[in-house]
Image (cartoon, rainbow, N blue to C red; front, side, top):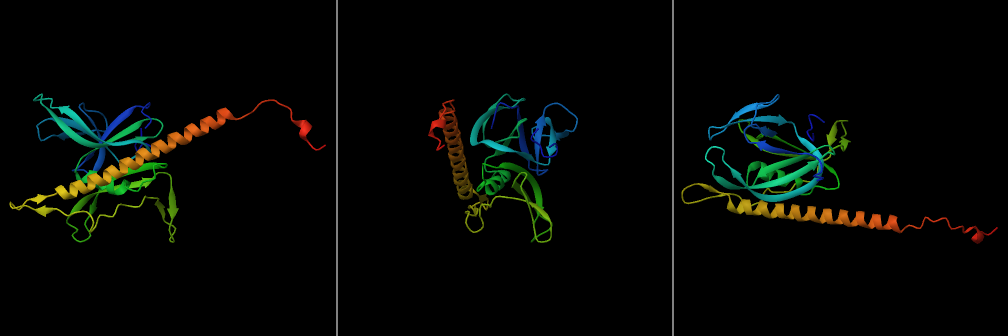
Length: 237
């Protein structure tokens, strides 16, 4: 598994994960009750079972915005869902992390991976953080780091290496109230969509560069002259 607590090439088994807004943790879901899974009652009246994990680690092999159709088991109706998909492959399995477009976890993830170096192994987790200005409030936060890379500070404490975060304060458009007094997030949502597009385009460029380099290396190896020709006559003795 690509789970941190247990330890894309899509040739490895793909395991789907989501993020629980109530728990603030990554989970995988099952319709059947299994060991290590917790019962979750849905607003629709249905029941599923979630296994919560501390995080995921692996090389990012795929990242894209996807639109898919899901069918309600009770009503039989289908609806379209927009999600951000990120595949993390650890060589054993591929974790497919799905984040609902415009959700808090979607925006938090974009902020943390905006400057990520895709040559490195990604680690990601979610958690609730206490608001420093009001300790009675908590907000969902995302933590993205370079797995296996650590540094020590002046006090000798070990810290994981992290990419530079996307700066949003005083830059991302704030929500505004409409005539009904409701908060409207449209401009903020569009801004994050644009940033996600930049991340996806940069990932595509990375994949193309990696493929071109691999092809060039293979061509170089194939073209190497490793014959048995004896050039000893050229020696000065």
